[in-house]
Length: 274
Image 1: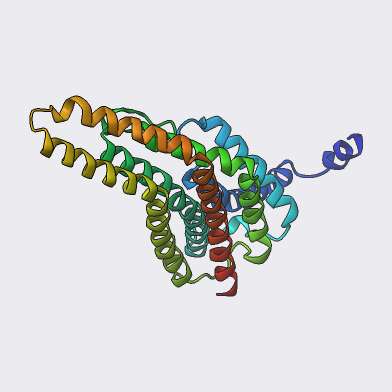
Image 2: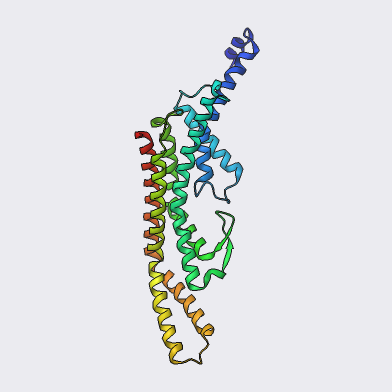
């Protein structure tokens, strides 16, 4: 420490400040990809994650990136057209990686909303802690169940490691193509609807058979009040199906989390190859 002080006594006072500004510029370029990913990812970008916590995670990961990647863009690129292109590219990479995960995670919410709409549980709504909007309770249960499975499988650590390793194979300032991002988004949307259909398929079959049975009963006994016994039976049937199929739903959500991570990694690999 004394050597550093003695060395700086004979130097101009602005030299150390210039190196500090250079480090801040490199830190700014390095944090764009990580910050945009944390903003759009389903777990780190949730409303229950406080903004100071999100900023702390972003800064901590950026320090690791700067330490592992000594070759970073210069401070002189800030404000230039080349710097704007680099910043836009970094934002596209981070937002695309986060949105791929968000699209897959939306399958659980979509399945829960359709189950609630077909069983009469859509009236039971609450504020969703992940998005801050009002949604059916069934959708929130499946979404939180998926988040718990994702964290229990260390999925959050896998995606962070994938994002950090992407700086080594896809350095800052590299050129990417838009075709892999568009195709990955389309494939993720298709798999989202497929996964949501598979999750709600047992509920749809049981509710269809139940509605047919209720229709036969009301046809044979027209004096019965449909609202007095049809709605309670339907709601109880949904709760009974959830209880019986919880293990299969957990396996399906586990496969959904694996597909989300694999799709994100394949998109990053296609950008590298591109």
